[in-house]
Length: 143
Image (cartoon, rainbow, N blue to C red; front, side, top):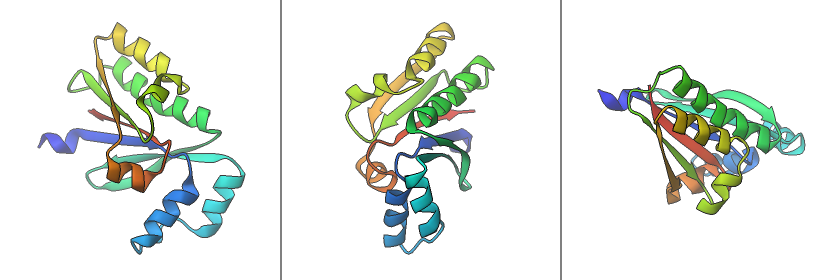
């Protein structure tokens, strides 16, 4: 089934926000201490989302470092020839005009052009934006 080949990743801007949204749904996977520490230490996780759930793929200090790592992850998959379909979907929980300003996005666009991979830019769905928080950037690809 093709849907099992889709992998999503998200650079979370505010862990505390995500914790509060999850808590409203009676989910307790992010402790208060972790959320506060992440906020005060400027730590931002990259979530890896697949059909069997989600995990933290990496955590970086500074949101620019986080988005750069997110886009590098996609660029590396493109360069390795791993994509089943020559396209990547990139969404932002914010204004679409902010996307080109994100650290690492220009490099992803360059790699995509070189390998004839189309990048589809979109505003994140309302539910995605509400659950992952304002400013979060996500991407999806089929591998």
